[in-house]
Image (cartoon, rainbow, N blue to C red; front, side, top):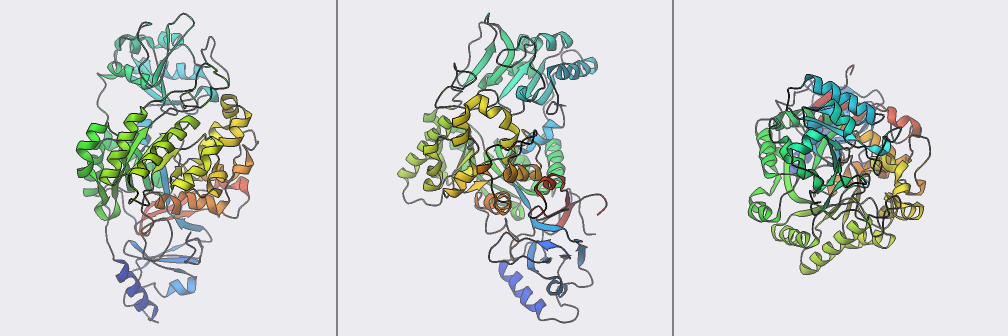
Length: 574
């Protein structure tokens, strides 16, 4: 079988005209074809996600490009002596999944620290830290990520807003700073040693856009919301610098195993872009990367022109978007709301980036022909961003089809739902968040706000907005099957369905993970569907997620991940 490791990729660019010319020539042959396909997948179900390309049983690939889709008999004409043939045995071949919003290095980083995503309660976290501290040198930083207080089976004793105090954690780690990030990335928990090293006391003020959570006496409990996490920097000052290449390598391995062929990285610095270019150059970038730059406005003004990159390294790297966050996450009460939280009436969340600064970022995006992608979760945050976009579009009436995005768009006021389609703003959402967050959305927002505006996929879709899909990994597992299932079922762990009227159909959900994500990145001409002439990025699934009983969808596995006609992942046994 023609496979390669991610460290030795073969790049064989082929123009669209040549592909169609060769297809005509090969179709005319009845014996050994003069030019045979490099790869043929046959005896399966091929779903093109392109209304102009009928679905078929087989698909032929020439170079890194799709040659044809059709019946087994039709595709057999492209099989030569050297053609690699994969028998799908009835399995489903679809366009390669495109992760529409994730944090690439974060996936690798999460594998290099304590994984707190599946803990049952705070006591389990304390036990994990105790084990780590017993093996760590004095002063060494202990890190973890993935905790979420709403998912624990019981509230910690003496909690504040459901958050534990640091005392039990500090007792098992007196000689090591400990920093544990919330699953959302929008809060962190620290022990006494970390706060001491960072100089944090009861007199430390809250920074703009952040909050130090305090007990009734005003003492920090160890929890830090949004920008307040930055106060913990000195506690990590002596930590070894992260091995970002290793993080990237681990992320590549993980996403390929999940059927992902392209990844939209939601916020990286200029140094990370340099790493990605180097990995493309040395052949180790095994997925296609589309990256958003996150940096202060002055740094953007200085660096945007030189950083803009489209289809670098045979379509391996594109940099043409800017990322900004204007609020936090709903779990830690950081989402910026129009009205107070139902379960925390003293708070409307946090505005983490001034709107005046966002207006300047919008100006820079227009000036340098970048997409602007703004994290907005709360209804106030989404309204403010839509207002910024509308003003910016008004200053440049000659610029059309900008495809600016709101990342997450989780909680909307009903009046703002139609504005996405009217303004041409893309709702870059994550289906898995609806079911992961579902059990505690109503306590946060109340029944009416939740029903009218929480994760309103169907309302946005029907209003004419482009809706995309992803996982926000490592906030959630990067698995597209889980997010696809959440999008079509809205089913929670207890079997209840979270506002079922907001479900998408199975084909709509597949579009949200393929063609819509390609469109949201200005890449619809080269990916997102199995169309002859487009890149041969293909995912093969063990089951037909479009037709099997709904409850069987989560049992589907990725059997092959093909990038540019090369099998980059094959499940053991294939």
